[in-house]
Image (cartoon, helix red, strand yellow):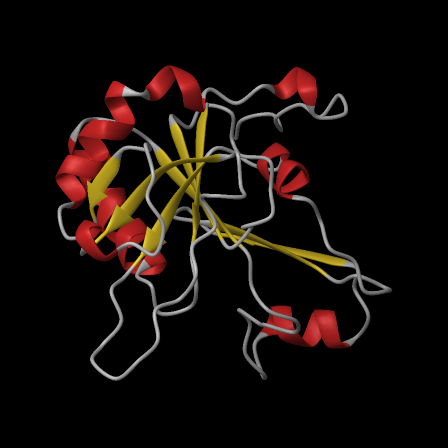
Length: 189
């Protein structure tokens, strides 16, 4: 399993790039999963649905499945923040690539996404000078990056080229299970 993170400020284009990379990698015959960090009390369920009613009644976990998909919803009794490594262990190990969005402080190799500001806006700072886990920068305007970098510069608007770069650099993204507290991938379905 290869894992790459995407770091950047809100509005930089992380979600759009990840969304565009999924079909690019799929076209190359690869299985792709996504781990996304959400804020506080997000919900994927809806009032009135059986699963929502089960959770509201106090179920710790609710698994719902059909012949097309499976979803697991787990309620935390106290606020808890699972690590990105714990979430990776929840995935099917047969996946080729995992695209991780929203864990900018993680120790995963990451591509920083930086977009040139609109006229009148102030440029957002960059993370790559201080984050040794940033391995490339995807940008729409490399000439205006706030700080120089020797890192590879990827065209934010060319997801096929970003996918090509990921595949050419694939070995560096191999996930080291043994380094993360003995976590191992879940059994495949």
